[in-house]
Image 1 (tube, rainbow, N blue to C red):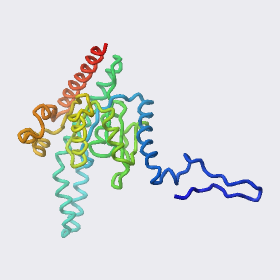
Image 2 (tube, one colour; image 1 turned 90 degrees about the vertical axis):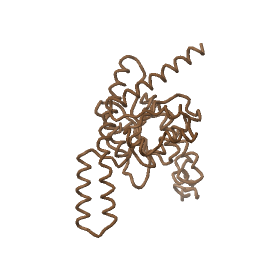
Image 3 (cartoon, rainbow, N blue to C red; image 1 turned 60 degrees about the vertical axis):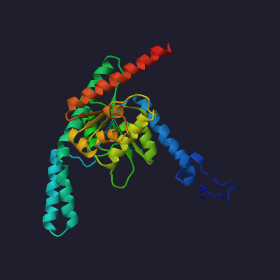
Image 4 (spheres, helix red, strand yellow; image 1 turned 90 degrees about the horizontal axis):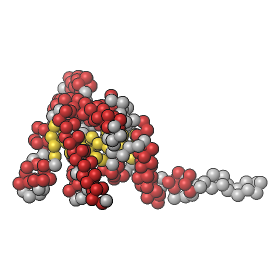
Length: 295
């Protein structure tokens, strides 16, 4: 990497004016400065979350492909028109078939949005009583993430969007609180912030990415890296029990009965909220007991 000079020496006898190292964009974007960039993605979010008094986050994960009913129906009509115009195109036919399989996500989208509205209202009431607040957090993208951020916005609550710069996503959804929107370059720093202030987890139907985020937090809890027992709620009982045979993990001795029993399942926003409130209050009670023991 070459160190650029802003100006070379001139006829007046003045020497060159090199940029300061911390203003040298060529250096800051170089391989050599990777650790500095990583540190920025750890420290800058911490400062902004602190400035916004965000201490407790309930993370919501789920498919980016989910849509509300009107958008889903419009997408199906568009896909059908493409298939009709290109009857021999196997890729278009396959895409339409896959899209039609996702119709069940409409109901899940509504459940996630309503859960986040209820959560934000509940948090606001707690704040009025001098109790800790809990804010909605997502990966900042479309689909279930947008549903969660929108639900919080409907209740005039803050919500966090932990975005990632990838070619197939267009940035944060419009419902993220502007001062709490983040765009990460590194997946591992993004995952750090998904876990660090996480006090609860709600997971809607999704694919590999959603499962990756779910199992990341399950692993951190099982190994004791996260010491608090977070409430984990899976939206869509049939989907999760069809896709992942949790009892089989227990049957083959890969996880314990206790591990499996930590998972809660819900089909409605009211069910999800009940599980969240019970779990959060249990964590708070455990923290108070620890403080009493120390004294």
